[in-house]
Image (cartoon, rainbow, N blue to C red; front, side, top):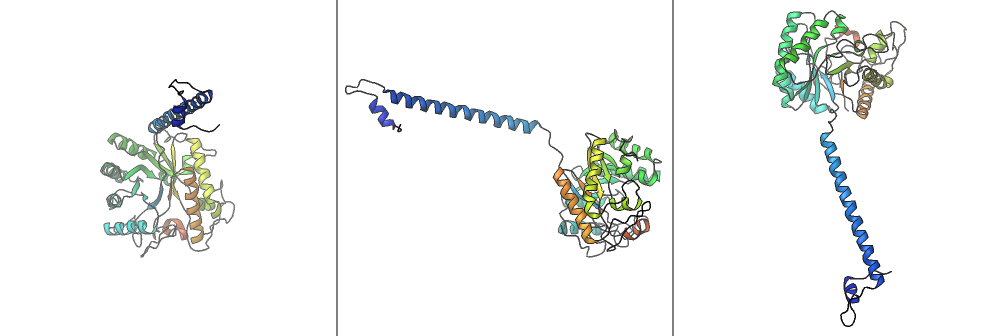
Length: 359
């Protein structure tokens, strides 16, 4: 049936003397039109209702925390040593942060102290719109720890938008077993009593967060912290571990993800952040030997470092998880504690012009 225009419908609705009549085909056409109009109205109303419901759901559903891609930042480069001598200057901190911004994609850093000149880092980061995970350094000197905790509270309150997370110590248990658990607790309690707004943890190796057993068991800090920071280094596992002794560079990213998954099962509901991971870029071709199995799996070098860093961040991004590469700038003082590979962990060189790995 062909469609009728409005004029045809009006003309055909009246007889020769103006007597109205409605042919059957016009009635059918009109009914079809009304049905289509009614269907259009119903569908339109349903779309509006669905859109409003979706908008309400988005407004009420809590947003997931944004995944962080950060670099561990310590300005003890060149001849500087955190154990003695001069402290990093403001000019050096500015220079290193500018280099990091210019040559890498990182706009988030993790810092290792709040005193001895390092407190300037937070002002410098804020000026450059860099977010910070701040570690309040704790060790075996109780008086120094007290000053560090006080300084940590001060900077946390002074830079609430820049310092986004806090940690009471880094690898305190790894260095001292359980001897200074009380210092970690004292720090956590002090931060809470002071009313700092940032989420709090204590950072340690994944093995310590597993309570040194496999499968993982919860530690006594599990209920005290807001999030969990784990340091994972297959490079050092390749040397020291009799549990997971052999992980080459091309398997390191999977190793990192597996450890996070272990901790997520152990601490359900807690945000797990890979607070340190990395691979040494030298001495080129250097290999560590596992002291239990004599296996030789890890090979140092620039290509392997790039592979480990890039593949790990890629896998973290796919899952929406956060990570901190260790480290931004190589530190020359580290071989005294970490052997030949100690000063090759930076994605940027520890000497001028501080050239960085390209991502």
